[in-house]
Length: 81
Image 1: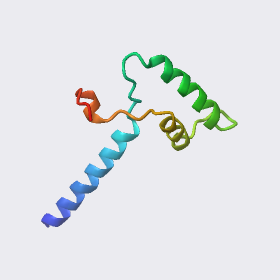
Image 2: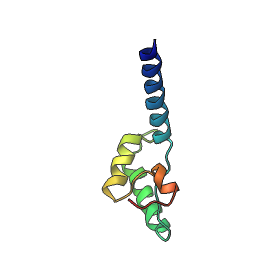
Image 3: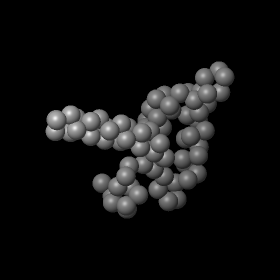
């Protein structure tokens, strides 16, 4: 019985962390807002479909190649790792 509860808890934790990661905004240090806007504009032009919808994986990859990353939970706490 305990194994079922533990397994269910692990599944819920995994799903909640996946959802939280998917909604994370971009980490933009102070003073870098203009560079971020420029990179985002270029990446949208490169990765958007013909109908204007963005493909997240391609957008994230494009931004990553330009030195940007999604915000992590410790970024919100001010911890620099």
